[in-house]
Length: 348
Ligand code: PEP
Ligand code: MN
Image 1 (cartoon, rainbow, N blue to C red):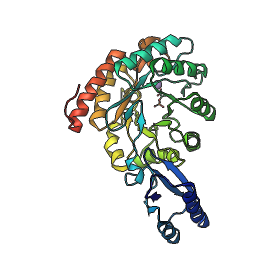
Image 2 (cartoon, protein in one colour):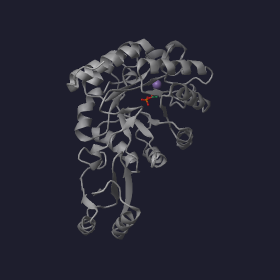
Image 3 (cartoon, protein in one colour):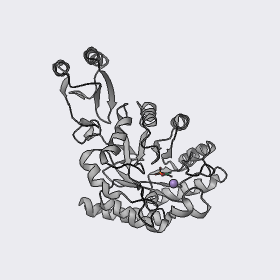
Image 4 (cartoon, rainbow, N blue to C red):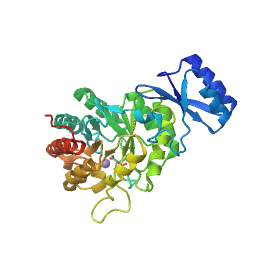
């Protein structure tokens, strides 16, 4: 990775850098951080002659040759000062909350719209809502593009940015063109490297964020972080990691809650981590404890399924969505626990 001593290379400087790396059979990719850009060398960056030439340029500070399978996501990467911003929050600086229904019912737009107002009122920064749904049963409701209009209307009315899951290229382009602020990659697709690359391409040069769920089948921490690297290497570093429970399930829970992975993730990457306790435990009454456990483990925030009438919702809501008053309580207790954990003096 090339680190300039300026915030971004000029066109001329980039051309000079590109000529050098091309001569060694490599390519250069701009990674646009909030404050400064870094330049990834795609290809074998171990060639000493190439590095010497690059480091000889007056506007280059250094060339990092981190030996890591996820060199951009690595805690030692120059991107480690990058801050992901979403919903008016700089992740890591204060607790972040994304909430809303599992699935948007296109036949009942008011349920989503009213829920959107309720989650905003409860303190959420981002509205989540599934337009297209990955369902185990092929005969269950699969989602409907009409729901995207409802999600965007809810965003317009509340002013909340929105998060929705994309599963293929068509969803991806529809979501990006509609102005979805955060693309969710679900637990089933977190290992779909072709999709991860398509997402990386689609958001390159935009401020769109990605909420990357941990796959149900992911084992090593490195596997999770490398999935994020697939996206970030294409130019946009706004990735948020989201543990949400793995298989096999803990007896009685929907999955095996995996918030305890957070300290391990944070030792290896700079990326913010928010936890989805709903899919981990799968039952609304277990969600508050799982949410607070995640914060105790160092989560930067939470993604919670919430519905004003969970029983009228579709998808997971009847089982695992919390009511807005429960969300409000989780948010307030999270803020308290955050202060204790991070030693920040009391505010509100
Ligand atoms: C969801 O967020 O509704 C969802 C399907 O998530 P996951 O991919 O974690 O199962
Ligand atoms: Mn769900």
